[in-house]
Image: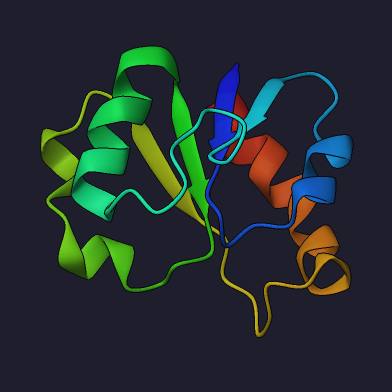
Length: 95
């Protein structure tokens, strides 16, 4: 699966998703692009957008996008706080 990591997700998180093609927003040259435009750009090349921005679903109309958005729900966006979410993320990606 093709996954972009939002700027709010640590780059090293990609190491824990080895069965997927993971790119970062920064690698794509999309740093600083606002959420609506960012999601439209991601929809053209990716399957699922990964973020920790809990406000995103309230700020954007996600049901109109041709890609899924997964918001990682953690008390922090630091890697140690996100790693326990990897098994559930993998399960969601399989569905």
